[in-house]
Image (cartoon, rainbow, N blue to C red):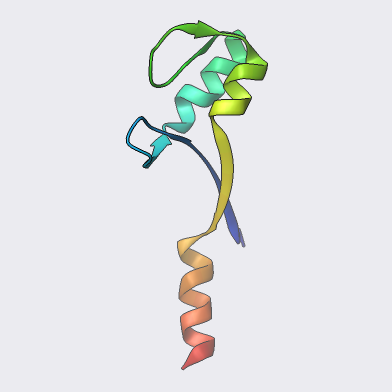
Length: 71
């Protein structure tokens, strides 16, 4: 059973978190080509990693399981 799901997001110009598509993330690392998600300019991997941050959230499966335990 998967309990956590990895996702990626960045802080936009308005101070809101914007989620990034996982396929775009995987493609960037596969091709070693990184772009700033706000300006779309080409950047290096370190800068990309400073802008685009990973985070983890519970899977729907875990949430359902925990709801069952709570009742």
